[in-house]
Length: 292
Image (cartoon, rainbow, N blue to C red; front, side, top):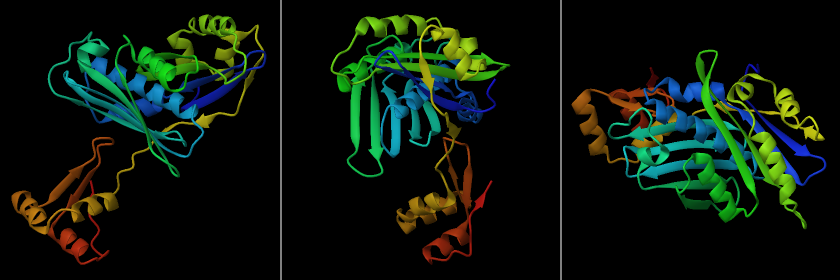
């Protein structure tokens, strides 16, 4: 079993089809660590994490990607942020009760999926699709049909391995080509669909690919590490506080004696007292806020 999360890209030598295989179990555990989400929300965040990693790998860009689900049901928001370095974080916001066996539609109600791509250079792109599929994978396949117009299939698995939350997945996509043989693609889809969750969670990528495609010529490329990384920082909190009117900051200090800024993504608390705020307003770097 791989001791850390990795994304693997592979290519079929005899077909115009590319593939990806990702394991994100450690990153998934980090995302769940500071929250007590209901089981269906945990599973959905795992699916979103797998999907975002796979989606990022289909894009040739440097920058950030956000995949978020919004709805009017008890699950108001589920979001994963990632980038081309496969640095991921995620969070969910819930208002109300979510039953143990809730479906995607039952959790989100009337919902949409918003995919935002923010390149380091160039224009920001946003795609919005309705949640018309029964699963996240089906909704994303619909997105690819609309935007990329390249036949794409996703295979997403969440569950447990060795008593811990686990999440993995695979993607197949037809390469842009003058001629496409969709029968060949369907054949590879049928092979890939036989993958078992336990195999994805525990086996090395080359063994998974051999089990699925041992009669095919497959080139497996060097993997890319996937990690949990939050972008919160003391400085970002200072910058946010400095955008508020001084009277408002003073009122917050009077009420509680300090200002405690909490990061939903990683659980960090950044605590500022009156001296910290005074130092910030003075442009001083001597009084650093404490991280608890």
